[in-house]
Image 1 (cartoon, one colour):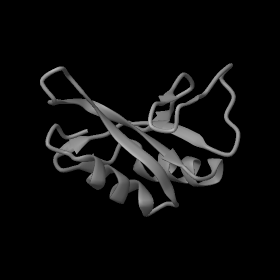
Image 2 (cartoon, helix red, strand yellow):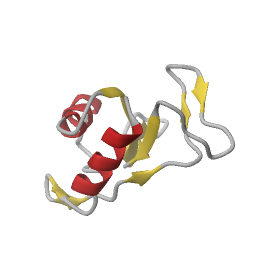
Image 3 (cartoon, helix red, strand yellow):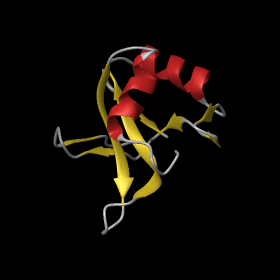
Image 4 (cartoon, one colour):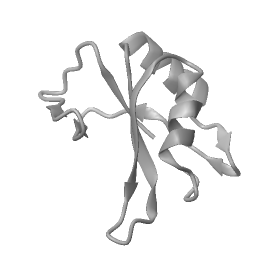
Length: 94
């Protein structure tokens, strides 16, 4: 992701393809973006559509890679995706 990208912008970007339950951007100890994040869509179908439409697209001058995160954790919901299975929520790594 572009390093200046904010979580609200990430959520807006993905909301074109469905309902975004959560969008977060990884940051270092100083609070600066690491250039990647995680988005949780309300359904797997929406998530797959977002992946298909957004993968390898240009966002603010930077090509992004979008894929399913098989090992993700959602801290704000205290939900962990275990055993590489996804139920109603689909975690997408950006």
